[in-house]
Image (cartoon, rainbow, N blue to C red):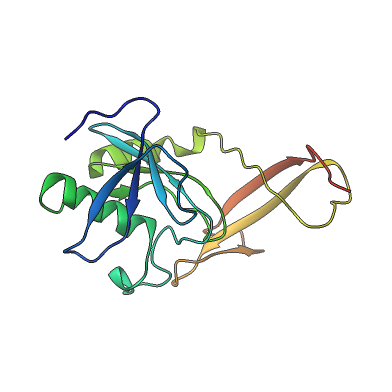
Length: 173
């Protein structure tokens, strides 16, 4: 194959097993394309578009739903010629776009997850309406249910604290 240039993008597009392919694109991307931004022997960084699930919506859904995890697994199988380990470090909500990090081994995944609390996450959101204050902090406790959905809870037992600092950066009138 041809060597990638720094400005090239690798897009992972979902197909049937017979049609699975990795596509290199330097032009405008399809809005439902999951684009690989970085890949080495240990990690893969993918730009997830809004509207695409990170993982299946419920246990047992597996390959019946189009997900970034499924697309990355297909890409790695296509690239290596056989199924390989793909460890997802975190998730983003279906309607959220952003970067997802995948590990090439359970050891790398565990090492990165052990230090995940030290990772700073920055989100830029377009919202309807205006918050009461131009900046502030929202504190909640979050707990994952059996259906793998994360929800706000008042019960701190087994929950993780979520602290969000926000500020308005622009307004459109």
